[in-house]
Length: 196
Image (cartoon, rainbow, N blue to C red; front, top):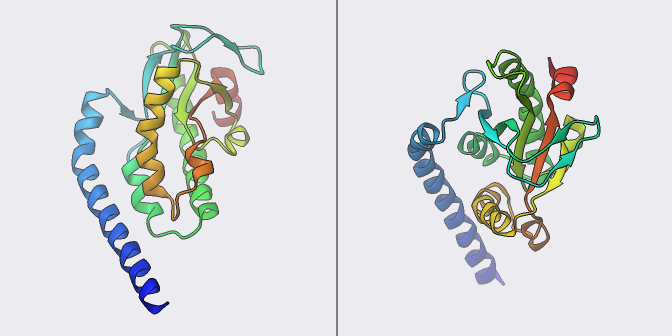
């Protein structure tokens, strides 16, 4: 029994060191990712980074009547994953981690609203979009979830998000791994109403 506990402790310690190494490499590579993806900070050192994108999903109508169609302009929001992971590493429990992510996104959305309000294409941009597997509670922030219809893109996003999920949790759950990534959408009017 003692040997089993010792081996388990060694594995956990080894995984923690591996996470630190991955985060260190990710921190070094992040400026390149930032440069190549045309992302912009909405405020200095915020958890969200943004860029204008064209919507490629199936047409949908949001609860406020905003129609989002293929090639409509949206502000795409990206979590600054490596910054977030560094903070989550010290936390125990998935509820605490989820609360941190929720609070970071909530505090960053006024900056996104300002960015959109002052954007030269403000009148053409219909809202904001994100893609995540962590969509629980996103409706409390004003987002609506829409399924990703393109199966190839869905699997690509799933594979991209999987390492982030594995790095952020204390123990991996098969139920959560199977949770598919979804679009998070919010209309411009709703963003301004809630956060401007």
